[in-house]
Image (cartoon, rainbow, N blue to C red; front, side):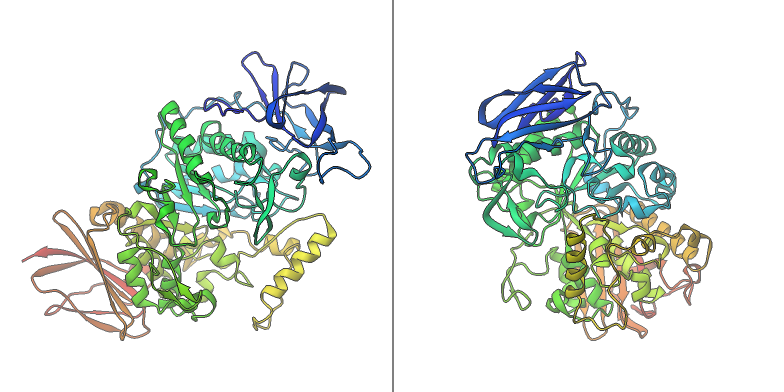
Length: 621
């Protein structure tokens, strides 16, 4: 079935006449009926395993489900030939959760008021990652709108929502979703998400949505009853791989392409962050990511708006972000975990696990200069040469951070930066991110030094699954000796204590740190040497013995010098001759809770306090 860029042709949708059109891919079924309003309606069998129905019986808000009998031509049929009753795999609204029926939802009824919104250039993104359930006390979309002006005042230009596709229960990180088209019921559902996005655009904020195309969650997952959504050809950390290149994969590919198009076209999302694309298994001539990009480009031509695709990638392979014309997949940007790892080791993180590959300040300088730390060298952690050079890729193609949901929540106890390092080091880590020639991202609460831990939480209903998750989490940290128990993912307390405490904003030092972040973001926007992400106009030099880094960035006649001291001692650094240095930012200033207000270079030398950054405006003399 051909994809229509203009409208969704999967699941249940309402056409211009108000009738419901139903498209269901169910190649395992010998017959399919739709049940709604006490009526049973038979679907008509089409080509390639698709079933179709147009009816005026189903209205918006009606509950519905499919009933079908498998053909007996596949190993997936029920042993006794009984009929199966299942929710719509492309459901837009699971009002009663993953175990309930689907609810008919009209994508076209919402009255948007964001016609003025043309989106933001990717290079202007300053991203704020948040989890809907823990960002506010109520933990829903509507309560996020109450914080939008706060985020604007902070200097944020884009919010990134962790996954909102329907998952089991009412609390989860979101990576266990089983209805990719349905918006989480406990967050408010699809209408509430549209209202949030509309409001974001009204106040000038872009919206990035985290989506998961590398696996499906376990509870409520009935895809294999309908057809071969998964393949045994490959295994992923979550089990069977999604079928992107095996027999009958075309409708599966179309399913996810339709999902991408829906978020952009029908929900006005500005960008998608695609989870762990390195776990997507596809050896097709046209990789699924490139296929998605081709359709997104067609949509952009239709809507006149740009739609960005940002990937989480653990391969250091620029092929993913290279233009399709050069053999790439065409993704617009990627997360760079290596910048984070080098930064954290520079700040004192023990080089254990995947941090073992990083020596700190030297690798941090390399990431500033080259984006990837490993771009062809031998990786001791992996036991092989790893990565390829990304010298031809622009700065706007890389997203960097000092913490994110993974790096916090995948610690056993979920400690944030504010608990792991000093107040001064927290300020330095933030500045290191905002001085980079890449896209900066914050994790919610970071800007005021939230101390509530962000932990891993679930709300499954299957007892065996609950116990398996508990055991798996404990086993993961079996060698971690902290004197504390691994938090129970299923516990209410684990979830509730992960919520932000907004009352901290009125207290010291949180109030002070918030003002520091505002000043830092303002500085980045004000100076083109920082905001123009030209990777040719940067030079980072490491001073390993002093655990310091000198970062130079320039644009036209503006030149900035950033001195970073990651050591616990004052350090005196040599400055380049031929320049007059004016200090424009000092993280150790009394204003920011530090010890000194003014730094004056003497004879091309500057002394910098421990765990701090100095930024100078340089003028030729």
